[in-house]
Length: 261
Length: 160
Image 1: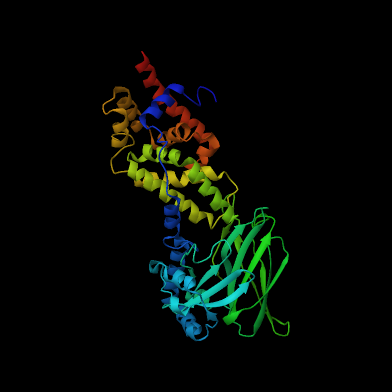
Image 2: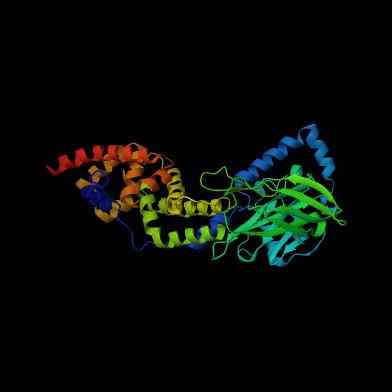
């Protein structure tokens, strides 16, 4: 440092003015509570955006058609009952975000190893998701889950990030979940950020979840925008949709979205 | 990356809490507001960590979260260090030098003031300050130089 960078006299005066409190101790659990108090994934901003889009859609003819197209979602949502921790997790969803999940209807809809996807209906006529992962179990770190707008719920296929972590060796772990409305779908195929193929079985009610492990960050080579192939029982391709999972729009990083078309 | 980032943020919190609290106290002029700013700033960082992968300096980014919270939490019309009860309690209210310095710092433009806090209290380098204040590195250099000119002239007068 040069004398221009640092002035010892000023430094001493500043330190005396606002002395460091060596005894100050934080409360990390309080930080975690604040971080998860509303909901973590997607963020309030994203949820607000989705809510705004929902309102906009509902007041248009297209919106009306979509609403009719979605129908009564509760009738098709099937699966084994979710554990109490998941029910409680859905119950912690902040209704200010535009949805009212019905925790008691939560069911297990898809699984990939030790990653489990749960879903429940909501009073808005769509559904909400909770992902249980080894690093974030609902009984330890509940976050309220992620709710899907009517517009998104009516799309033939949605997919997006519902969790992420990394292993000690630096391997990136992404949990991708979504749903197809095609009742005849049996398998979902897409590719990881490096282009390697991923294939998973469709679970209950058209839901799927896939744990994707890769050695490099998702947006290392630009957007992570794979083509999703919905495969039928006979191996026939029934749908092909390209969905952006990660956008390299954030300086120095990758921005992910919750399940969307 | 997300879990790794969360752990790094927690480690930063545990190791540097008192420094974050000090800077937030300098900005807000109030111990309770400062603590709230630190808690909310780290909570913001945790939430954002679930959306982004950060390749830049994590600490500088967390500083930005905390500084932003502290700026919002600042008491209305309480220009920084103008009348900080917590500080006065420790240093003696009415201390001539302290009062002068408070006034000089309070008179600085906000960016200069924040750059001074981050430079002297948080001991951040130019690149980290640039990230924390969301400005270019060159701007940090110019801002700190100007702040020093403004403060040093008064310091020199006092020394005489």
